[in-house]
Structures are given as C-alpha cells and as structure tokens.
Length: 514
Ligand code: FAD
Ligand code: MLT
Ligand code: ZN
Image 1 (cartoon, rainbow, N blue to C red):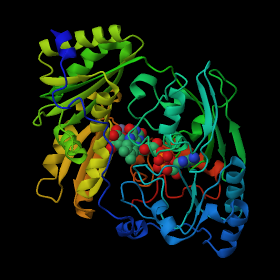
Image 2 (cartoon, helix red, strand yellow; image 1 turned 60 degrees about the vertical axis):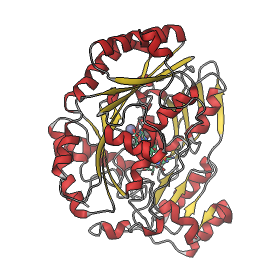
Image 3 (cartoon, rainbow, N blue to C red; image 1 turned 90 degrees about the vertical axis):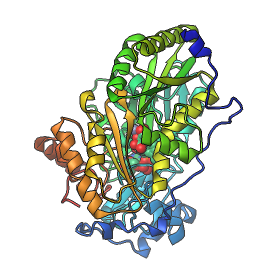
Image 4 (tube, rainbow, N blue to C red; image 1 turned 30 degrees about the vertical axis):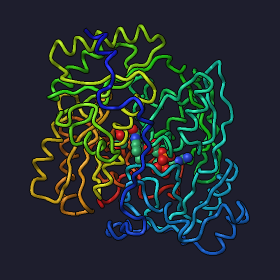
C-alpha cells in the first residue's frame, strides 16, 4: 500500500513548478521603526565616549574611506534589525577584512572607551545585532574568505563573514554538508551563527554547534587575538575556551575565524509533509518516527494551521495538505541508500496511517519538490512580518507541554489587537516558536504576553531562549532560566574579558527591566 503512497504524484505542486523564491519583504520601512532609546526610554546610555571626527579619521586611515560608512542613508539598514522592531542611532559602520584590522579597531575603541556592536548578516531575532544607542557597528561582511576545506577530515576553516549558503555550496562540491541549516542561510554569517549558537533544522541529526565547531579565533575587547582555531577532533588541553564564544552574542569578543567539522553529504533525501488532527498525534508520530526511521531521521518539524497558512499566503503557494488541517509535520530522512531509506519511510508511513496518526500528506524525493516543502516551513518567519509587528518567542519545553502555551495565549489575547497567534518549530529538539502578530507595536499587548509567557515557561521547566539567544530583548528574563550563581559567574567572565564593557553593551547580561 505504501509503495503506492510513495509513488503517488504530488497533488498540490504541479511537476513544472519551479523553486520558490522569497519575494516579499516586510511592509515596514527602516526609517519608520521607532528608535530603541525612545521605545525603551528607561534604559540609560552607558558612559561611553561619543563618536568624533578624529575617531572617524583614525578608522579611515586604518581601513580606507570606502570601508568606513558615515552617510546616514548607508548606515540606516545596519541600525535596524531583521524584524524591524529595533532601531539604533549609530553614526558609523566599519568593514574590516582581516583579523588584524578587527584587532586594531578594538584596541582603539577600548583605549577610547567607544562602544561597539558586532554584526554579521543581521538576521538575529532578539535585537542583539543592532546598536541600542550610538555603538559603532563592526560588520563582518567583507571577512568572507574560505581558508581551507579538507576532504579527508571534512574540516572547513573560514573567516567569520562567510554566508552560510555560500559555505553550503562550497562544501557540497566536495561531498560534504554544513552541520547546520536555517531559514536565514542566504544572509546569515557563520560568525553570527557561532555567536548565537544557532540551532536550526539539522540539529536533530548533527547536534549543536558545540559539537561541530572544532576551533574559533576571536579578538578580545582590548584587541588581543585569541587563537583557539584547532582543527582537531580531540584536544583536551585545558579549558575549552572556544565554547565561551559560542552563544555569547558578541559580548566577549569578535569571532574572526572558525573551524567546523562537516559531515559527508547524504546520498538520499526524502521529505514527507503530513496532516494530523491533534497535537497528541504529533507526539505519537514523533515516537513512531524515532523508532521506525532511527538513524535516517534528519528533521522533524511542526507547524500549526495558522503558521502553515501564513506561509502559503505569503509565498503564494498551494498547501500540500488540506487547508483546514490543524497540524502539519515536515519529516525529512537523509541517508546513504535510497532503497533502504524509502523502505524505512514506507514502513513508517504505513504504520502511522494504520494507527490513525496521519490523515493525509505528500512525499517528495526530487530536490525541487523537497525545496518547495521546506520553503513552506522556512517561509513562516518572513510571511509573519507581513502582518506588521511580530512578538516572537523561542522556547524549549518538555514534550508534554509543547503546544499548550499557544492555546493558552490565544485565549488570553482575545479582544486585543492581535492578528495571529501561532506555533511552529523543531519538535525533535523540544523547541517551540510561539509568534503573535499585530498591525504595529502595542505596549499593552506586550504587557499581556510578557512576562506571562516566560513565567509559564519557567513553571514548566522550559528555557526562555531555545536557540535565538538573549540579545537585547530577553536580558530581563534570563534569570528565569539561569541561576543567580550562574549569572554572577557570567558577569565575572564579562568583566575579565571586556573590563570597560565596550562589546555589545545592553545585551545578554541581565539589566534593569526594559
Ligand atoms: P547577526 O544577526 O548579525 O548577529 C547575531 C548576534 O551575534 C549579535 O549579538 C551580534 O552582535 C553577534 N555577532 C554576529 N557576528 C559576530 C561575530 N563575528 N563575532 C561576535 N559576535 C557576532 N536561528 C536559529 O537558531 N535557528 C533557526 O532556525 C533560525 N531561523 C531563522 C530564520 C529566519 C528567516 C531568520 C531571519 C532568522 C533565523 N534565525 C534562526 C535567527 C538568526 O538567523 C540566527 O541567529 C543567525 O545565527 C544569526 O546570524 P547573523 O550572521 O545574521 O548574525
Ligand atoms: C525557525 O525555526 O523558523 C526560526 O527559528 C525562525 C523563527 O523562529 O521564526
Ligand atoms: Zn527555529
């Protein structure tokens, strides 16, 4: 029965469909985003030096004029985050090309107490990548050199500003794959991925970056270059300092080079997009997938009806499952042998259907169809921005409570200005993305959502940030997921590595509520 299912042509995507491109951008203009210092007016600027002409002259002598942006229109997009929810007031963007230039810049900024904001692809979702006041933006956009790819060991060494998608293309040519993938791959930089310890859609298969990153080179606030750029799998020589830079969001140093272990490229990839009528069945399907698919299961992604439909509308695609389907799953297998993987998938689908877990679905084995199904899942984030303002929550939860908060929040927000309240995410990692949209920022709506959502998450022993980090937006709630002792140690480490606090101030470490 299921070999038929596998052979069945896709009902929703005509075979001639070409690869989807994200054509839509948020309707909000950068210049109309409220300044962060006004929106969060109780936050005070730190005692940093203000930028003066002599500082700009120094940077121009170091980098040349073309790599020092001061024109208001050139600087604007570096001040505004991807979600268009924060706007800094930086007057200068620096574009170093080498570790030595980053070192010179930081030494000068540290000596002159000039605050800086490191920026990669500026796709971060917690406001970490843009200045809050007038911090100098240090962009890694020109640090985009691949240094080496070793086909035998699978180790890639590159500069921090390489775009993830470009790295994927390069390693693919050598029979390898990047151990991480995410919807922002076309813009995000590997240095940004490391600095946020990004999760994404391959974490289920390849684990977190703490495992795949073999080495890091970073520059401390005073300009010291810390060379931990090991390419070895095993290296137990003292403290594992590289881990300090993973997920520290530019507050401990600027990552300049990375060494990453790339696994072999899977030979066979299949994607099933399935319709389910309850969240209990999502969990039952997950248990079944783990036992039937075992080592070939590479992603187990979930989206509720509102999430799928916002992507269907935003991308102008047809839904691969009936439009009233309450829950959908995108399940990917990747392995070395297509016959073996298809046999496993077939058995899994047969059992899931016989047990009544899944109602409908489609299966893709061709790369273009697979891409379209992934575009629907990955297109949710961008499509949500079309509503106006997005209140975005990225939480880890025990499986049994995974979806409860979406229903609770919908009920709580009844009668307010919200447009959509939806949930999607990486079920396999216990990571839910709860999103609420509204036409524009509304403080009353925010106060209804927060701190409630974080208190609820903490009560259910979850984490207030599963993969996006703390950035600017979550500094006042980090205590829900970190003990007082751990927070104190974080502050001590920050004081050792950046005593003047010039690196990405107002981010990550707890501050006054804002
Ligand atoms: P930026 O946004 O520029 O910066 C992020 C943080 O890192 C900032 O605090 C910045 O100061 C710091 N930083 C950047 N570069 C450096 C450096 N070289 N040295 C020191 N600090 C630095 N995240 C996930 O975890 N999983 C997902 O599935 C995922 N999907 C996404 C999908 C979309 C459509 C979008 C827009 C975002 C998504 N994200 C996801 C969030 C974001 O893409 C990731 O956090 C990404 O890793 C950020 O990389 P970036 O280069 O854009 O960094
Ligand atoms: C995702 O999984 O799609 C990303 O983390 C982005 C988001 O949360 O919207
Ligand atoms: Zn995610």
